[in-house]
Length: 415
Image 1: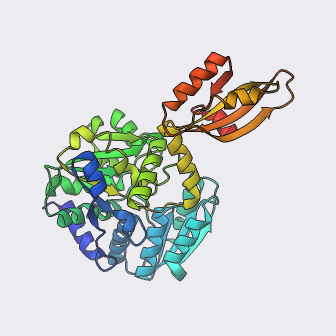
Image 2: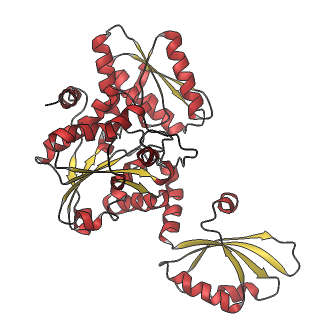
Image 3: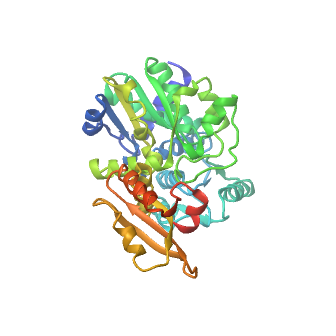
């Protein structure tokens, strides 16, 4: 057994003093849908509802073994890493100083404080994460604290590899395929490193959000690159630059093994898992399940493990998730409609709607025009094909309209 594999197994054994293994569950719904044995490695059921507790625990454990007098640990995070660090600080009885952006939702601040208790101090600084990170690192240098990196650290990578250790023990044999979400790369690097030796016949697929495809960019040029723009919707995996150490562990993977998950499609997956299975997943936690339809032909008849990496979903986001899911499925659209300013014009339009069409939004945008008025109208229907019928009727009647559903600039201002 290699040095890395042995360290991963030691990390997994040490974690048993902190929490039991997260469940590996066969999912009947997904298995029947795809004609495969689909298992979910439920990292959303860890004590902090994500796998981040593993890397934080292993890194802190090893620092304290070498330097028992190290009393202060620092991290910069607005999410799962902060909660994992807080939990582990309380476990080891050390002080944690957690830097968060000023814009961090109160719910995440409260959860971090709950996990850390009196052992944790939370400092809100900076509007953007880069500012928060700079403040955290400056504080470390000032007081001699140890900085706990979220992913680009060998001890963190070893800790995340414990997911693979547990998975193989729970399943009892090597699966055909493991699907792993990717953000900074700590989880994927750790699992790839362990499975390469413990289950070399197991294939791996890596999934990242389409709006934060830092691994895809790195694979294309052979080294980490910084994305110019990142969509932060999948906040647990939207990373502008994959880690140097994590990419070194991932180097050599085939481009076709890195899959992209569109943010709106992830919303469909979140709702399906919630409504059908009663499983609460955050956007990053849904990544592995989201790509199953893309792999449908490839996985039929095989044993597949999806790592559901986190369940810290803020239900205040649910309306946005529903909205994005409807738009992705093509059953909700927004139009700017040029409506004639004459009696009966609105009635003429309404009579064109089908029995499954419903007006979800109606707002005059320009009321001062003499002959025509601009109307923002949102229409929701039961099946996407209904829009073909409606638009054909509008065209035949001479109505002027513009579909703005996919127009990001307009949508930001009016939807």
